[in-house]
Length: 289
Ligand code: 13P
Image (cartoon, rainbow, N blue to C red; front, side):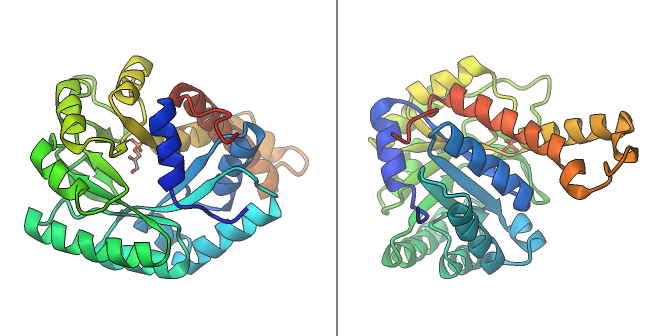
């Protein structure tokens, strides 16, 4: 199945009150693990790639070609979107050119007027290629590719302005943070989320920083209009934990345990476990049908 943009996925999620998981990829193994779980469980999925991960994987074309070939090679039949995460203006254009089916243009650090102008240009280019666009209002806290955001709650009027430009999905800061949540984290601001939803109507909302948000908060966020939830760190932690166990048990020293296909396998199982759990929690499991 060819890559899809997120439009239909989001409409169905909005209608049926669940959220599609966006899982960040870092390499071939990561991509394979996520695609396999999606296919096994008949679940739509969004593969997110940050510009840092794109650089690591040697460029937009390598990523787009790898994902497309893998979807074909693994005979994936569920909807898969390849989405640039926190794209810059130039990065979003390059991703679209290379064959990504969706991009996030993160213009949240520009003054609102400039964010609007640049967002419009990216929307026009994306739509001309049949691709979708996510925009962000209000910074998401924490660290993403070395950029530390303090985390600010989005202004509902700004959300309405950006939503009206023709974006397909909107990420709005509601106290969410990338990476692990500190012990004194106040939780998601549901009052702000409800106001944002009221201001943007049926625009599907995106929740970044999906790692470590308690299940009840995830469910409440979905009930208030969140249709896409981004998860990155939790897969990395599961990969690290399983790889550590393998090495600490001395398995890399036994037989051909040093073979990368063996060495990386437990970590990949860790990623799969997290992806499965999140899909279930988000209510998207089996929603490809
Ligand atoms: P976490 O790393 O906190 O899961 O956040 C992922 C994310 O929001 C990517 O955009």
